[in-house]
Length: 358
Image (cartoon, rainbow, N blue to C red; front, side, top):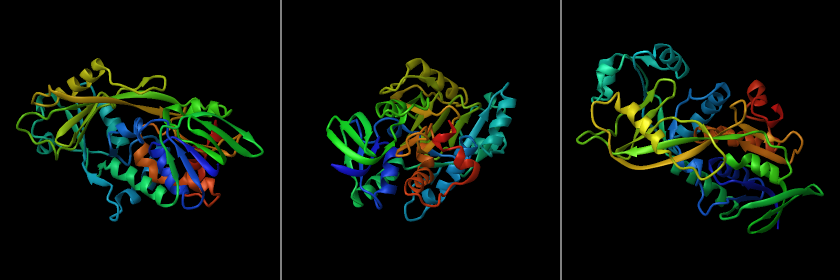
């Protein structure tokens, strides 16, 4: 079978790319797992913060926001973000407040947001209202349905074995047979370097870091549903309401090999303990836990575009923890580059995203 493009990876990166390209070219998406959106994309904290990430990521966030807020789709729900500082954290608190464009508020104002706050343990607090929950299931389904409506094929339980160029065509061997394609898009998340090497392309040293999350039962008699997201100073922990319970993360960043990640009990306990220190109610019943892999290029920017030595091999990787909130702008840029249209991102930002920077 011959296709215009084969995409490796069925997370939010691969699926958004599939949806963007399917109206224009024949697309086949290969996902190794039995379920789509299984690894990092299925384990997201589901939050949109426009000023989260480095300069380049913030540009993609801003470019994605209009689509995510569109009335016709409604992928966002206002949540708000409250940063809480404790004694000795003054310098880091100032830095975080500036980076995230937060406004200082009084402890009484913070108490109105979260009546269960432990005022004695908090010395500083800052807030911004325009932080949102992302309906990640709805966003992913939007892209999946759009891709299918435009004729894309999505194959689960189909693992890449090897691929090579022959007569300007990619000859791709998978666990489900052989495919030929004019181009190949690597959207394999934590496995992006491994996929590149299976295709005879030099890796870019994209490294996965594990992050753990616990779902905790809300304190008895306390309705947490309207609480803002709560952040610890220096990105050392965070918590947010979710479906009547609380999800709490120690915001860990442990370098690991690509694998089906699981949470570490001790790491989770540290995150819950940090959160417990600012709340005047017991948080002691864990309902579930999980972990995901956040994969970063060496400079922390996403990698979007053709490989510098193999122009028919496209990278769409290094999303870090920003995959869902950058998906709209990032996938549009990828499709612009692939279809050789005028790009939506220009100048220094574009150069900071192209694989040729390495």
